[in-house]
Amino acid sequence: MSETICAIATAIVPQQGSVGIVRLSGDEAQAIAARVFRAAGKQRFESHRIHYGHFVAPDGTVIDECLMLLMAAPRSFTREDVVEFHCHGGIAVVQQILRTCIEQGARLARRGEFTLRAFLNGRIDLTRAEAVAELVAARSPEAAQVAVAGLQGKLAQQVGTLRNRCLELLAQIEARLDFEDDLPPLDEGAIKADLAILHAGMRELIATASRGELLRTGLKVAIVGRPNVGKSSLLNAWSRVDRAIVTELPGTTRDLVESMLNLQGIPLQVLDTAGIREAQDKVEQLGIERSRSAARTADLVLLVIDRTEGWTCADSEIFAQLRDQQPPPLIVVVNKSDLEGPPIHTPTRGVVAQVATAAAWGQGIAELEAAILSAIGQQQLQLSNSDLAINERHHEALVRAEAALSRVDETLVAGLPLDFWTIDLRTAAQALGEITGQTVTEAVLDRIFSKFCIGK
Ligand code: GDP
Ligand code: ZN
Figure 1 (cartoon, rainbow, N blue to C red):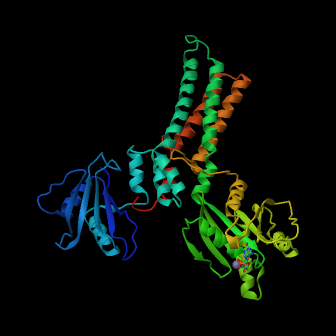
Figure 2: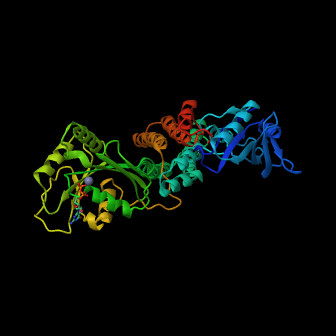
Figure 3: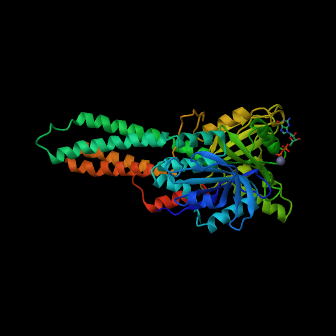
């Protein structure tokens, strides 16, 4: 018997949202539905059918006119009986429906518990479960695409293939250990070839980690520079080009303006640190400090200078202020390039690129974006539908698997006995199994599903 869980599955904003969904999953789901849902006319409860009627509290009060969707086990997301009430959105109705379900014996679901059950009941592997949360959190169409690829099981499939290869090799070697005399000797050449294929497959997946990280967490970019060089103009021009602006919020002080842009799917949080050199009094001094620390903690700094003045002492001063122990890569943006000016000599150390723009005329943005992509080691981030990107957890496991595989290589080269190989091959297979969830601990599951929202 599984406990029946329930939760509000839709985002709840007071007085907004036309539809709210309350979801139940577990052995009691149908029985609870039968007690609280009054179907109109002569509808009988049938699986995979939408029923129309009223949600009625035990005391007879009609709480809402709603739709009830029934999905009987095992043909449901959790492989348990699932019931969904599609009611009028708005906080009051959904909460009353939720409360009534709880009074009728369901308990409030924990974070990600529906998805956890789908995993535990074998409907989806762990990478697909993670993709569910990733899709919900995706901040750009490209990030969503990667999540959908995961949802379709593309990562699970590739990892599964690698793991099977490991297990096949292991089986071959173990057979030799058990029946040494009856089998032909191992073909070392074939094993080396197999190991090379495994290595290549792992490396291919590991190489998607940085792309995944970029798509998921994005980049923080700080624009710094003297007053009047055109920082705000640059941010404006840029915002107009990358129309997919997510939000534009004023910073905590008037010294920081933040925009969310989308650079080929990478969510960019761009800060216009207006105050870095504009301080007159104490309040402004505080702003400067904030700007400076924003620039220091950015993933990338754009230092804007004025073409008509070239590289000035004041620019050197700002540049020096940003030199930290580990300063972020810095791109010098030579703005007002529509005008003439002296030759420009920027420092070479710590400057990864120099780009000419004329922000007031909307020029140079494409070049700036190309320079940014190149600075972060991504020439382009064009994604096709089948592209996947691993997350931090997958990355860590793959690195472990690859290290174990390298030890197998060494054992082979050193001519050590067969039993030495099996240990490392087993470690590799184990690490790969953690990715898809074949071998996984409760602690890992807790960590994954605690990041979900309630109702997922
Ligand atoms: P900020 O103080 O660095 O944010 O500079 P602003 O963006 O406020 O720009 C200062 C002045 O420079 C404004 O009058 C802009 O119109 C002008 N400006 C900005 N970009 C350009 C440019 O590319 N070419 C020219 N000619 N003027 C520019
Ligand atoms: Zn400005």
